[in-house]
Image 1 (tube, helix red, strand yellow):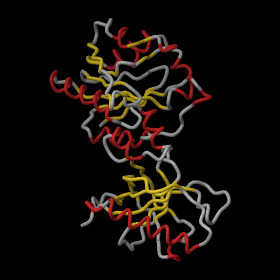
Image 2 (tube, helix red, strand yellow):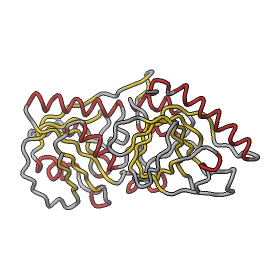
Image 3 (cartoon, one colour):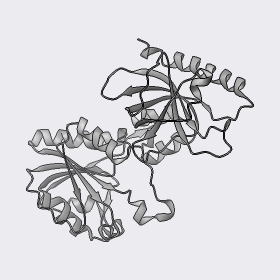
Image 4 (cartoon, one colour):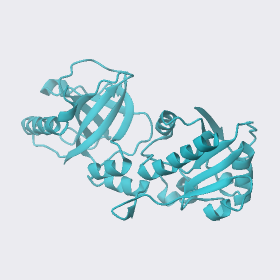
Length: 313
């Protein structure tokens, strides 16, 4: 997959082969986004076009609504790029969403960012908007003769539209399993194993401290049943993750991700890992002492083993 970062003014003349383009922010690549992208792939295959996706960076709210700006993501850009490449996408356009870009007229956007790059098919969600004040819509896209436009209707669950906003709300309110249903997969966080306080090994629960590879939205503070992969190894390891501020040991501390892997005793500092969150076990709690903490962690481990039984080799 070729990735092109586009800015305003758009000085690139990429000389691309004819393209079918799915367009949207696509944070999370959830089931609703999957509908748009799979429709693009279907059209591209039918008409022998290159498969392309256009996304934006940063989130438009950073420019358009600073009071409610979104600076954490379900799929930070690098993760989104990796997932799209796995879908067989040929071109990824990452458009810098700046103040100047946001001020473009709808027609300028279409000419400079779509027609200029040989887009022959545009596929977008029913509520896609573009151009200054969001004046452009699916309806206005359909007025252009240079390409065809396909509108994808909302994908719903229990008569409610699946959206990134809804999934974020679920993750932040202890409803991980419901969020995973709307994602169509387990919520995942990629990162690197870094040095921690090394307290876990002294109480029989050695942990890997994970530094996320990007501005991930972290779910509500608590304990989770997880699986984890290490580097390019496909082996799936079961474990328990604590996402929180370690209140038993600190009055005020940064949020950390610590994963205790079951039946695992390797040193993996510096390794890139992916943590898959399967089940929410309990909220974060400050314990009166180590004995209470160890008792709770033992129970968490037992619960995780039961929930992750299908991953037992």
